[in-house]
Length: 223
Image 1 (cartoon, rainbow, N blue to C red):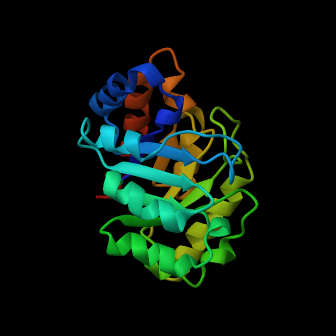
Image 2 (image 1 turned 120 degrees about the horizontal axis):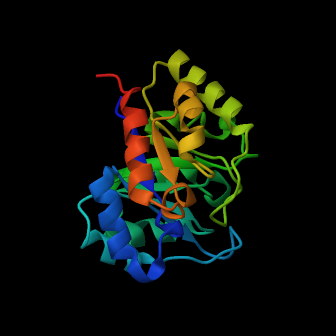
Image 3 (image 1 turned 30 degrees about the vertical axis):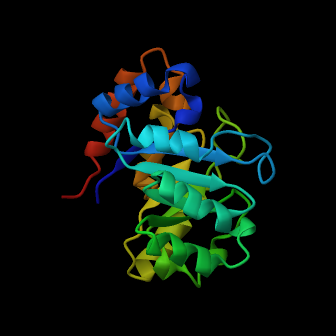
């Protein structure tokens, strides 16, 4: 399985987002991660469909849109039309989780579920066969730059074991406190998609850090 790196523009320079996206693209990014926060489900307010639409015109990389919003049913078509390629939602915010996940897929997008640190894996048991990826939050969502919650590793290992028992090849994505320094143990745990914001954009040489991440992940890819 290919290991993918998804720089999160939440940590980029907002006045130079186009340059930031170009920089990580040249350094080997696979996706651009876009955190959508509504100020209700999480205590912060970030981007709307307009930014996703603008990004779509400036990059050929898939846009991995993480909906941290109270109304995913309404937000899904808006962000899909804007250009999102991947859409993940939180089970706490969806009244009809199966309906929302299948709607994402009907729109031709990859559908994911996002699980907060205290959200149990069991919430997705009845929809797991509909999922294209599973996003494990290793911080409590709402702000960038938080420290990695170490217990997340045990959750990832349990998820990886469950997927293997079910003979499912669903990628595990991780978001929160991901840095070059903690990527290798996470690779060993079974993560195949790495979201990193401050771990890339807040470093002295973001492009070099991303290249080092790419060198590391390439050693774990199975051809």
